[in-house]
Length: 330
Image 1 (tube, rainbow, N blue to C red):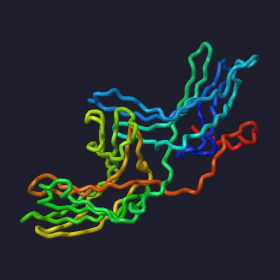
Image 2: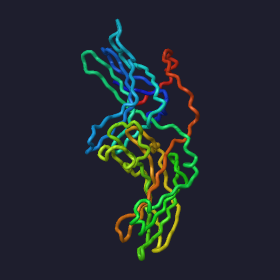
Image 3: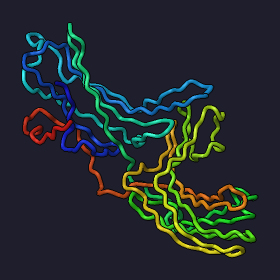
Image 4: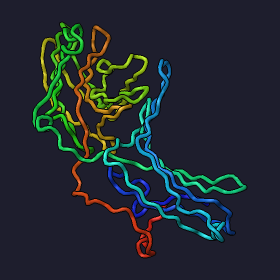
């Protein structure tokens, strides 16, 4: 048996940059096991992949370390029978991106335990852990100013048929918040009424084939310096709802709607390989044009402020008392 346990934390705990991760490699065998060493390795890696790129994909390893937690010595060439704990402790970088799994790429944090055996194949165990983004003070304008956009900035031809203006009271939200978009529709058709508007919350993600010196601050491909085949863009639906909104021909109507931002969304971030932000989109049936008319407005997601964190020392395992509170969980 080989597994890895973390100290004082459930399996799904999220860690902040700068946090100390403390744990142990747990072995269990009925008889003493010959081994050269027991090693722990940890890594933070981002990677991307899609078809049609002209450049080779280059993963970005931004965090890496290892430690021997046990090694054979004169007179000690075997790991004792029974359950044994080999302790480790390491600190995350002060700046690192949150864990993310998207359509064309991911950011993952992994810890791996290895028992090197002299004759038999080595034993390995790997598990992932989750890192999130800390609170950051947003620009005051993003928190208080009303923001809006209209279809005339998106598609002038469709705007002549149905005009949509989409507004948000602010541009920064926390996971679990309720967004209150205001949708204003002007129906320029002679005979066709508007009867429905569909609202979407999108996670927008932008990907590179290789890490860039400066992360893209915008997710839109037009703002990226790379060639089109060496970048990708994805819209993923986070939440959606359809609501009744009747607007007669040659009339304008404005309504407010509510749509929930899930608690488990990844905060917005910029990284040399991947950039993520969010948008709310309103879509109306185009009527006689047979194509839908839409309008979208971007916003940021940040984590709420936690209690101030003290600097955590690396764990001292010289005393069994310091290890008494281990919470072992696969």
